Length: 129
Image (cartoon, rainbow, N blue to C red; front, side, top):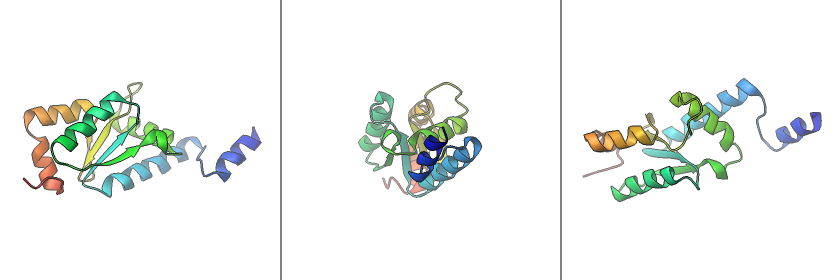
């Protein structure tokens, strides 16, 4: 057991419970603030694909963080789940616009339908029209 923990630390994986969550949360916040639109996704998720297509179809070029391709993706996914308050529900896709959490697919689609998504994108500088 000690060998597994030491190997994980040597490879840069965070294994501590609460510390891992804080590190992952800090990483999520940093990544979310680096671009106008950031989507946390899993490459095999159909809802993630739909959200990415929505933004691309609007002429927005989001930064996409594929959690399944990141060595610390699982920790970030748990941090996103806590941010959303989504106990056992899938934590992806999660969208940030202008560094602010918009939410998961349901919130993004609701904002699109009720007309509040475009103003958010314009305010963040992701859409110019």
